[in-house]
Amino acid sequence: MSEELATNGLTLVVKWSSHEYTIDSVTIEDTVLDLKKAIFKNTGVKPERQKLMGLKSNGKPATDEMLLSKVDIRPNMKIMMMGSKETDIASVDLSPQDIPNVINDFDIGDDIELGNIPIQNREEFLAKVDKRVKDYKIKMLSEPRNGKKLLVLDIDYTLFDHRSTAECAAQLMRPYLHEFLTIAYEDYDIVIWSATGMKWIEVKMRELGVEKNTNYKIVFYLDSSAMISVHTTKYGLVDVKPLGVIWGKFKEYSPKNTIMFDDIRKNFLMNPQNGLRIRAFREANKNRDTDNELYYLSKYLKKIAKLDDFGSLNHRHWQRYLNQE
Ligand code: MG
Image (cartoon, rainbow, N blue to C red; front, side):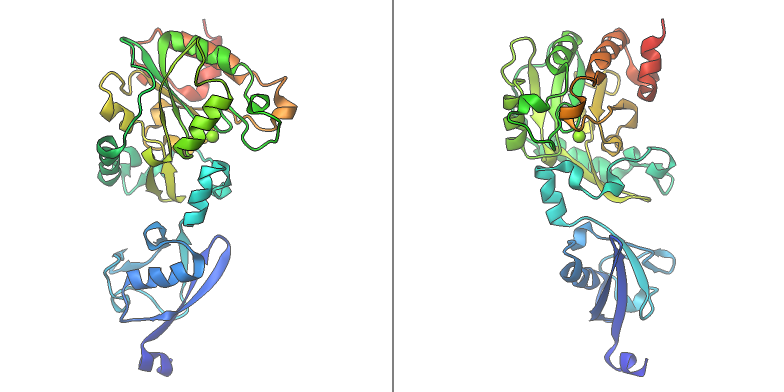
């Protein structure tokens, strides 16, 4: 203790991803940001991606500029951290499902609230959406058509099993894909949004025969850089697909006429009402003959296309709705 006082040194234990890391390179004269940098050296999680749970000053969350001497901290205190490594995020390029399982899926319910403001209404996140609206460049593949609704589709595990091996992409394609897109195209403009890089999206769409299909057109592709990261109280930092990016750029699309399919529900955090969680299509070799999700979803899309406003629908019950007269 006396030695610690003499040097102002501070030893802290950071718990992250079920490991504990001892951080002993900071002093109480360093800032919270210095602590985050020290944690970065140990864990590889960049300071801006770290969320240190319970780090407070006078009952309020500690800010990066704050001196550790002003933070409610004691020697050998255990701090829980949430955050993802850049390498984990980079690996999204090849395999989005490799992000730690904890964020793979969860029910959107009370957990989406931080303070009392729902995530989709929080100003800092809406500001990020605005920034994407301004800065993200969309390459148009076809033109929006008058009076059509909008269907936004994920790729991996939604249209395609990207983890199984096969001789060609077509063997990993979800059954009924082209028929589904053909039927959807009658009432919807179609956008593809994947948490990978644009190059991968283009390759996959070409390999699957979507790119040049003569029965339907895709309006544009969105990649991971159109996504934003948001903090959730329960799951820390997660990347999501905010439809506001599209709504901000195209006045013809709105919460009233947009539906998005994804196998990961957290992607809908900024627009829970408009998301439909599709059952993941995995193990294509085994499930190719029995998976009929896209077949029934094409019928659902057809049925709801008659509505002027999707606001009254609960896509969790899409199968029930489909069976109603
Ligand atoms: Mg997916």
